Image (cartoon, rainbow, N blue to C red; front, side, top):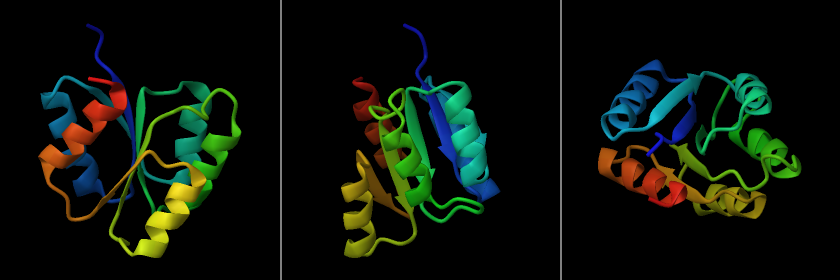
Amino acid sequence: MVAASVLIAEDEPHLVELLTFILKREGYEPAAVFDGEAAVDSLMREAPDVMILDLMLPKLDGYEVLKKVRSDARLKKLPVLMLTAKGQDRDRKVAEDLGVNAFITKPFSNREVVDCVAGLCGR
């Protein structure tokens, strides 16, 4: 079975390192970008199987990235997991209205993220 690719859009280096480690350990192929513009650029070049998207990113926030993803014919079905320290109901509602597939609040458990990515990949 080919490893599923996961694009991590997160601006905190220690979280990128953690997510990369746990996803590699589970057999995924993670790649990371550190701001919203880089996320969109990466997605336009090659769509991953799943995207992990931080809400509070420099240049373009997670909502703006999600809007661009959902408005692009090639990307609109891309499974997106939003990770955020902003776990208020309003933030979740906005993300859901924009078409996020899953929403996990920081701090998170490694297992929760891995299980969510697996579910979004259909594994």
